[in-house]
Length: 230
Length: 110
Image 1 (cartoon, rainbow over the protein chains, first blue to last red):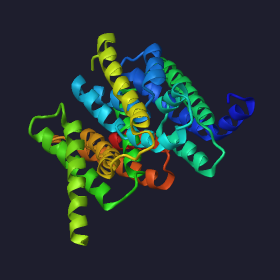
Image 2: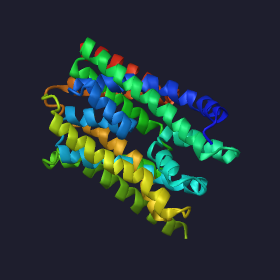
Image 3: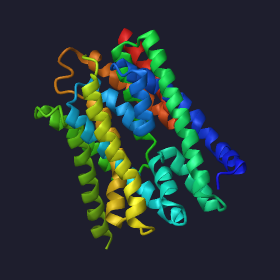
């Protein structure tokens, strides 16, 4: 039910995400402005695409002169991990209306997944409250990114600095992944794959192909490890 | 660098938004409470590590990067190492961004 208590409890759960999104959304807006995206375009991306990694990847790959097809393939590939979250939430949304389930699923992020899943597991948490967590988080992200665009247009960041800020964010996202042997194989093979693609004159699709090579190598590595253990 | 045009924006934004929505919504309605096949879940779990490594490698590694001298190519690598340390200590995207930019600017002045 859309009650004041539900909204309050959802807000309390969403506050840490909202503060985190202010800290990351403003730089994301500044970097988006560096490739010529305006406040309306960034607002539309936040409202209908809503992906932190994706919204950092687009300016990063645009600055690296990647072809549009490569940008789309790479961003979409990274975002397939959302399927895991959606599948994990399915049991908790069985009693919810289709409209609410759709709205909830369409606004899940890495961070809100973590908060809502923890609340569902603790018990007493409803899809309505979870949807409010998502809405509060998305509102914070959208406002922060748009403010970032306005700041970015006002101060004008040198491109090399903007580009390395994005590299730093991807390094952080990489280093904070769960470190398993298979993930290390995925990362190492992806990096080697990117370099090999560039050496072969395939700089355009290098990120997508490199990531694909990394995933395939990690799957093969896992299969080999399973066979050795048997 | 040419700024992105509205047409280019519509293509990138439109396709990415549709694929994102499909990934977010379809499993919840199609699976109806059943779990994803184990192999599919495993493969999806490898994607973030591989993709973020590919993005970092694309920014830092280029064939012939040392042709213009050691330091111009090594400075971004050194700044990247600083970010790795900050990431391990803080796990904060914001601090990594600040540390990376500061280290990069500092090393490029040397």
